Image: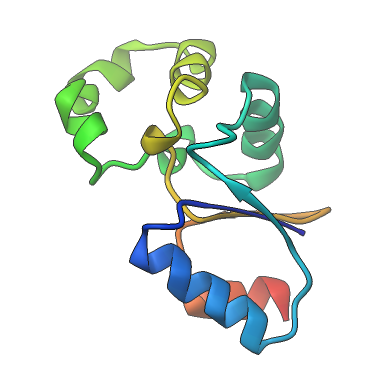
Length: 116
């Protein structure tokens, strides 16, 4: 399982602690030092059954700075994926990637259902 996170994010730290407490093995990927590629994002998106907007960190400063709330509806999926790949701070985190699921954000109930 791949755990994509931002070390300074309190939600990510909480999620990591939850994974460790539940003895789940995972590989870590720092979203800022090692931003996901367009290919990775596309694969995760297709595997997730989530709307692409769920992959955006809509509460982040970068999202607001770029006025993406207004721009995203006009952009194609490929353009949105390209944009996500430019800056890890645009990506909703943490992201969990397993063989058959992709979860964005840390919602403990959802993680319990999908990962335990």
